[in-house]
Image (cartoon, rainbow, N blue to C red; front, side, top):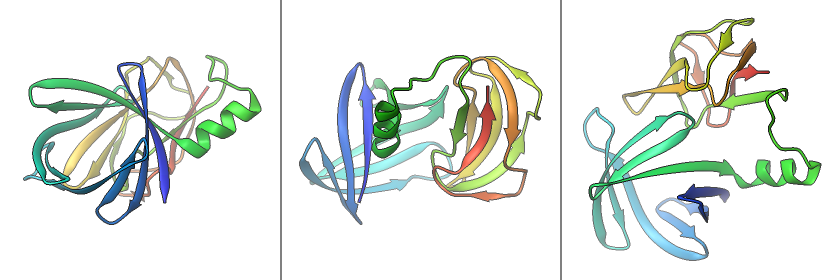
Length: 166
């Protein structure tokens, strides 16, 4: 089981991946089937017998989900990592090291930065292909690239560190 904290419009939701086809949101269990439609960012979601179509894109460090004509910006954090940061009493600040991790398993298509590069918030650092979609991985804040841990053609796992910024 893996647990995430999803924040939408300031409201936090605890999302637990229970296993194939089951998730719990704030303790309520749902049976789900989530699949890409074609090669774009369109997905089919069946949740507890209801059918949805959603356009989902990772942009500026968040997931943008267009569902029934409403755009939701969703920040997703791994619960364990969040808890460790809180216990250590550290919050990210501009001088603190930021590890940008892969939001999903995929293939690195292009790396657009090198160690030593100065980057702006929102700047594309690399392109990651997953489920036949290319996702732009962007800088969450202004900073200096300390380390690039991947190269084009490399396969990565979810939560694998891609780039480190200071």
